[in-house]
Length: 136
Image 1 (cartoon, rainbow, N blue to C red):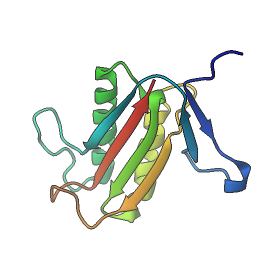
Image 2 (image 1 turned 90 degrees about the vertical axis):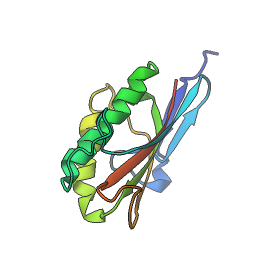
Image 3 (image 1 turned 90 degrees about the horizontal axis):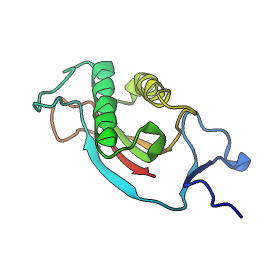
Image 4 (image 1 turned 120 degrees about the horizontal axis):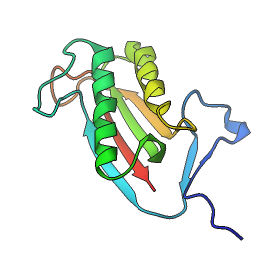
């Protein structure tokens, strides 16, 4: 019997088809990385897109990509995201940025995702923060 894929995504029909994520992600072997919450800062620590949610979301996914690349990973290795938004009215813009990011790999990745609205993040100018777990 061949070894199973190291990352398998499941969507039991009883749970319905999720829009852009997976209900279950199984990691059967390999290594994992845990990424601290990423915000919309550049390499110099400056806030990118102050007051501009789409710009902040793009920067957050850019930072996630840079962190993954630094360890030899890409978007296909993501197995879990926890997304924090300060305003759920930005959900559509978040999904657009997320879908662009995951479309950078084939097949498009679909990690398990938890998304919550919070009253504030650690910096007053931040509108989104995402922490991630990746496996290979």
